[in-house]
Length: 272
Image 1 (spheres, rainbow, N blue to C red):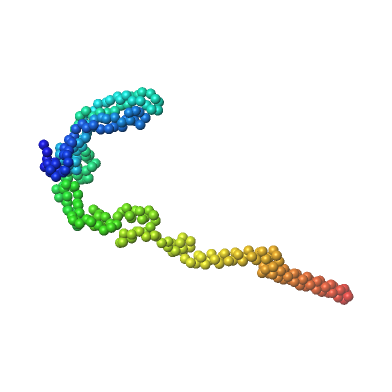
Image 2: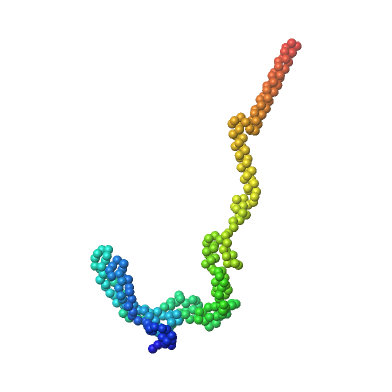
């Protein structure tokens, strides 16, 4: 018996009318093995509507095999060039099966008679949200969910936000994302951050330049010193001359003292 939708489809559609296929055995092409011939064979598979003429989107059932038979198919191995047996399964009867599992139901909903049922009749929700008993959760009651370019509707805040994919793409490339304009810009390197790493302020650079200048001057003076030139060489010559003059004065004073002692001895000798 045809449903109303099927009748309307038959009336307003040009060409031949094709009936809805119920859950039943249907011929299907099944692959065997890429090394054996035949590569594909025709077997029976359970296909079709699992719950009458109801749309698959409205029911949570699927068409599956109730019984199967094992067939040992004679095949030819193109690698070993020998005959061998390939095992394939053929469906012999079909049934409707629930396609949902307990994990498909979002808590606190639970699975009952192939439906996710909610234990609560009503729960208080936040602003812009209302309770949905069918989905057992608070949903946005905003009618217009169309967002401008670069934005998407967020079910948590019930408003348009920047697309998460654009934000993640921007941050993964090291950019800086502007959530107000929903645009990505290049991250500017802060000079203060570099100063913090190296010294904390411009004093570090001043000290580094002065230290480098002093080291270069010392190296230059050492080169001149070995060539008997430069400030260091002059200072060393001055120091040597000063030591030499001091030694000369000390030697003269020692000689005068010794001459004085000899004269005194001579006077004492003459007196006695």
